[in-house]
Amino acid sequence: MINNNFFINSPLEQFEVTPFIKFNAPILGDFNLSLTNLGLYALITVFLVLGLHIVANNSHSLIPSKWSIALESAYASIHAMVRDQIGPNNEIYTPFIYSLFFFVVIANLNGNIPYGFTVTTSIMVAIGLSVMIFLGVTVLGLSIHGVHFFAYFIPSGTPLGLVPLLVLIELISYLARAVSLGVRLFANMVAGHTLLKILSTFLAQLFTASILVAVVTLIPFAVFVALIGLEIAVSLIQAYVFCVLTCSYIKDAIELH
Amino acid sequence: MFGLRAWPTPIVKPLWPFMIGSALTFAGVWKLQNVALQSEEARNDPKNPFAKTAKSGGH
Image 1 (spheres, one colour):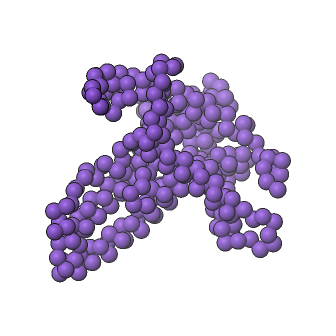
Image 2 (cartoon, rainbow over the protein chains, first blue to last red; image 1 turned 45 degrees about the horizontal axis):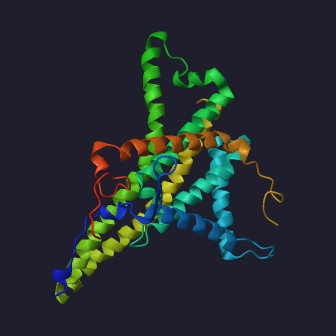
Image 3 (cartoon, one colour; image 1 turned 30 degrees about the vertical axis):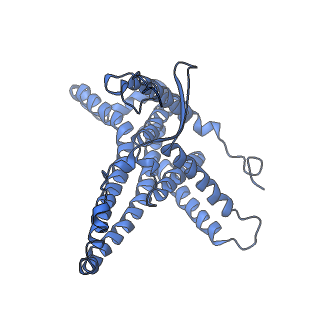
């Protein structure tokens, strides 16, 4: 009986970071260098992004390849997003948003391969990225506007009596950006992957129960396949949302509302 | 063909605030990690590379 050999792991086990290679040395305090599954998949993501751009290189061809057309179309979309969100005078930020988009989208899509690891389901990666963007945007705003940057916390036309309260609310909502941007990406990816893991464990049990049950299970399996499609859509949408919000934060820092 | 000479895109000019941001984030994570490794909860965890638990002898 195959059923007896089933070993059900926690659906959250796929998010655990485990080291493959460890290196401990008593230098610089307690120095520890490990290649974890997170580090490996981050490297894979970087190589995939680089590989995609090498494959899609036009190489002076008169007729571009399909890869090249796809990449140029992606570039045009991101360029249009930056122009619409930050403004046509600030296209200087396009390379930043472009690399951010490709890192997040390839990490998300690569994570949909079964038995793999998704880099963006690590809270350290997602929150790290969003805190980096938040601090960068704050430094950018302070460097452009100096002390006037703090006018951002007082909406125009506020009565004097309401200023302390509104400053507090605006400050909290501004600080929440540091976390919300990362949590949005992290939570969506974790929720989707957990759901797929739970359903697939259940479906695997049903498929191996008996022939009749296995045939009937094809119906929920169709729903499961649709959910995989949804998860791929979520991967793309979350990368897009991450970049749109980054653009809008940069715009807020440049224009102050 | 490719590279900065063909397309002289600015790198430091748009990215310096984010470089400061990433340096600060890295420093923060570094400190947080060191504090967390020495916390009561993680001190004796076998996954902690600096766990002070006695190694089992013989093998």
